[in-house]
Length: 198
Image 1 (cartoon, one colour):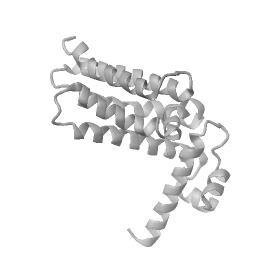
Image 2 (cartoon, helix red, strand yellow):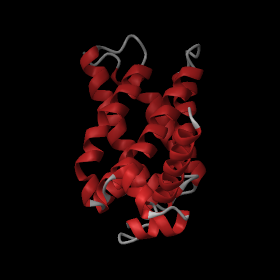
Image 3 (cartoon, helix red, strand yellow):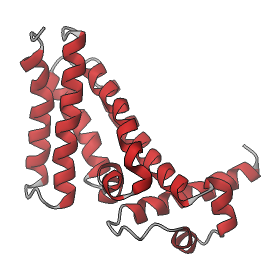
Image 4 (cartoon, one colour):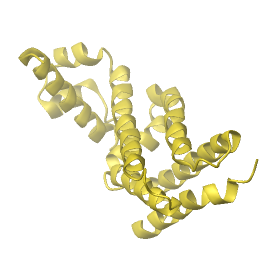
């Protein structure tokens, strides 16, 4: 990468990080070109060169967090490839996700709440769900049939999305450890409950 490309990438990364803070703040009016530029010290010229529009920037911020969440899950599952205990795989995947969306609540709010609050993301949230269905489906044991695999993956992603959304919204008042333990049980027992469903 040339020094020009490095500077462009550095500016882009700085603006994306600022976007996570702003979009994940919960203030619907926080994300604006001016606010991003003021918080990063980067001029509007570079903002428009990198993203074009404010809505395109919002989508880029969402995609950045979504990609990180997917990579965290894939990495956690990959690290447990030799594991035979579903609870071990579930614990690794849940821990990776919790670290991203609960321990870093602004990123969590971008991933789970922003598609409901930000018009530019209404379709984006739905279009990225299959990425997570695929990760969950691939992590299920080999004896789970194809149709059951798809149904379980969609069901788990839906359930976990609802649980984490409620938690981040402050409407699910449980301790972090209890939340994690419940999610691990939910994921770990799904293959057992549905493996002979076909």
